[in-house]
Length: 267
Image 1 (cartoon, one colour):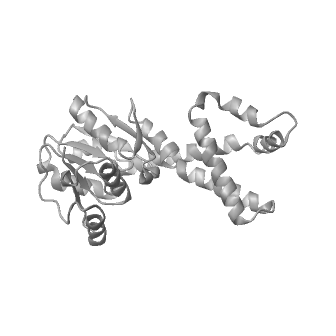
Image 2: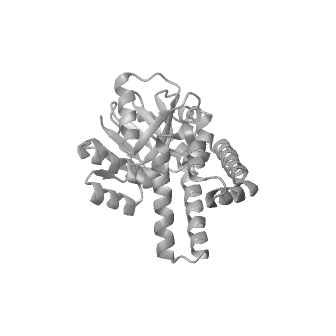
Image 3: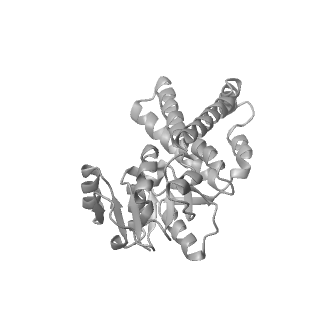
């Protein structure tokens, strides 16, 4: 199917890159981007059609809404006369389906999604939600786009997207924050920066792979490293006494509440 990206920012570029890496035809992809630098970069990088202004959208084209949330209303209202049978896949953070419907004169074929920045290396996770029942062809098309940048899940309630924003949307920053603190701690113990960066990053990467197939068994994994009376047990006691789990809960709760608040401002 033809895909029209409205907006050519980082996430749109990640999606396009993922699709092309999975042998999607460049001839089936186009981008509408008003910023001349972004537009020329996209054209040069991907060799796809890149236009400055919206002209016409084909009836069988998937519209990927990839502009900033504050640009969404004016853009959709300006092209609403062209929207009929198309599916709109929105990656505009915080914009609810009911708002997209309102700005497109009641259009119903809408899928809302929340990808994350790991899409840049096709290791992202994207949450999808729609109020409509998609036919097999359209559902497969949406899943092909989401699958091009990593894994995906379908949600049963749109309100869960605020939680997704707080977890997988904001989550990479939490991981980077922890990794940075881990590296600084290693340096404080006498390791060089190069030694600390390699040891900490490889430890995190290896541990995530080890945990991937044992997510229901994480406590046993912890126990297998933390032998009784050993060094790991002593370190874990410090994490527990400083209530790391509570701090993480507070962080995700704050992000969740902020996501809801921002969403209410745009809808």
